[in-house]
Image (cartoon, rainbow, N blue to C red; front, top):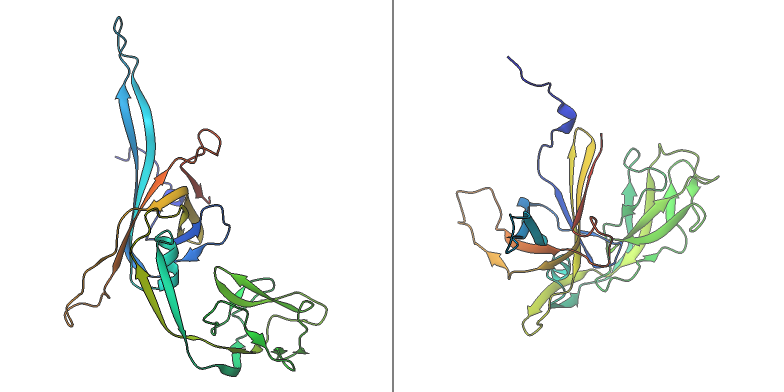
Length: 267
């Protein structure tokens, strides 16, 4: 016989997207595909016992959390951030790609929603938009920057935001953006000698039945070096994974009971 009533809205299924940001920044970077997303809250406690009376109970001396994640897609720039900027990135530029045309298909974009460029400059600067046809809509023709669209940088990537302007009459049309960029031919990460990993923020986002659950840690630090196990050339479909471990502490600059993490669940 059932002892309680099921509430399927409370069930959380699947893994999570892992994002990091420098402490105090609003710009988060997605660490990409991976496995083993896990976190655990912990307490350091001590029982308070007076000399002349009964125990007053346990006292929380410290509250913290540990977060694990193994990255499948090692973006060295994102990993440098995740490791607290204890590394250096050396970029070797590739050949410049001139007049690159990126087609944003009808149905894949919405007004005021960021669309990243597939081509990015290795040095992080803004791609050079074509002087004649920077954005060409299949129905509405040439669009004007800062009126019909904006070029913005989000989470380290440049892209376009198409606005609901007088010129842009419908979202049901392809939009072709044309720009020039110089990609990276290679990246080199070097490390050793930095002694204090920088503070970060970390966010885990799970989507179940279209509803978000977000766990955000206010103040975290990378606490381990890379751990990389090289898989066999055959016998596994999983790529080699780069293990990361983070330790979250209470942020004393925040108010009491809101210093370690927050948990948002959509109903």
